[in-house]
Length: 329
Ligand code: ASP
Image (cartoon, rainbow, N blue to C red; front, side, top):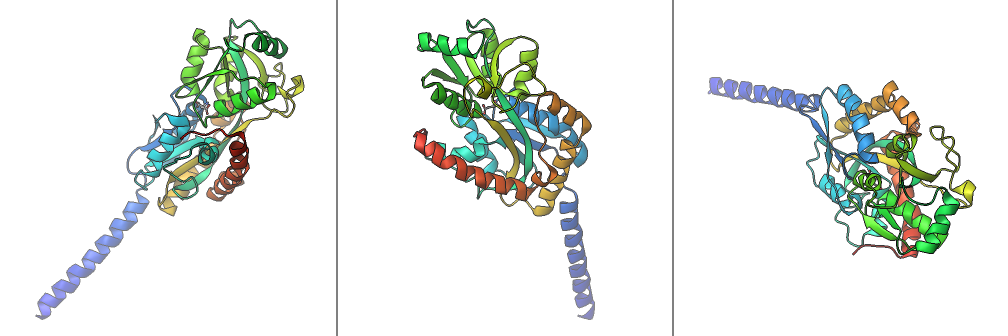
């Protein structure tokens, strides 16, 4: 009996010790396989460009590859739903732009809640936009564009990446300011929209500088203005839309990194450390500067920084969108 009890105690203690080692290594081992970074728009577009730029240094910091997955459709909401339902173990993370804040007002039925279904890792990057046309479009500057649109408004087509995409919001702002409704063509991201602009199948596109600066510099598209209130260092000869008379025209696209709700805090901290390392990587910083995109201050690349910003943006956009009466069923 004594022996049995001793054995039982010994095996129990060994079991406890093993369990302790097991849980320590489960936490300590993260990540023990590649991490999937979900992008809500098509490959080759601006969000994808940012994701692929930071995936490599993040992977270096985490000691595992960070693989980009494009889950496209419905202005980014299909990807948000996919991530909200993924296993909360740190192996699925998500980058999305301000569409995360506009979705609750734009979509009547949303199968996820940006404030309840995610953990927050940090803000990523702030990117201005540019208003572009296909290279052989007849108008050579904004004044000519406005005149052309007035005379041909039924013919002109404007691409976007779906309801809630920033290309959609920028296009709406543009149409509201010039008081004209254009024919809009939705794509699954502005990567494919840009391909059609280059191919001449669509006329106009408002898109982030993370994709457009090289196209503008190589003269592959026409540019009418930037959506920042000041000219951009990377495009000093391109006027702002504001300075050309579209007063107050400003769109700056902020991005955030998320994980499914319930992802353990030590794992979130580890991913946050990798994100911060990526945002301070000299090559990333240089490339973002070439694309006139800003790295947020370090206190914003935090879970609290992102959560606070997201809450404020949901409050800001909700009434604007509801007033405009734009939504999807
Ligand atoms: N420009 C974004 C992208 O394709 C989509 C959007 O317009 O929000 O990455």
